[in-house]
Image (cartoon, rainbow, N blue to C red):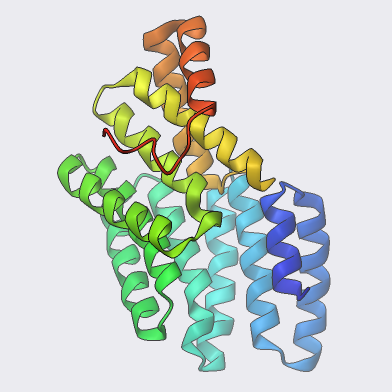
Length: 240
């Protein structure tokens, strides 16, 4: 596999030390040979590690370093991942209005680049901004658009994130039993792929989990969570 495939797989498995080691070595290699794409990917990976570790300022700084390399290269495709991270940092920092603007810009960039799967991913993230801003109807619409594309196109790697969205929306609407089931569904979907959530989605899941436990109690949450783990993601949304 390529460095990009290797480092992203390691990140999804939660192997932070491996990501740092691989990325540091790749930056040195890429700079030595003028490989802008390799350097951007490595700096982007280090930004994700910082964010997963809770250091949002460092994550933003590393993403800006990656974006600087991308802009200097003149290849707009290289701007995509750093811009995604900057939007995610704004969202996780609570600046949802700015994050919404950044996600919209990212969607426009990826539409221009002809990358429909990434357009869909950023639509999912935009929906979370709308949810956080209290625009439940728009969030529900955007989540529905994203979910339909995932199942229609067979983008299996994104199925767990569809479940995260379902959990967050149910929680925002006050349906904590459903939210607990959706957390269980998301946990099972990530486990089926041998992955862990991206940092922003992990934070969303944790918030939903905490809110459901507070309302349902630990035993009530555990029962609904266990029910959710047995659901099929492709039919779990049929009645919602």
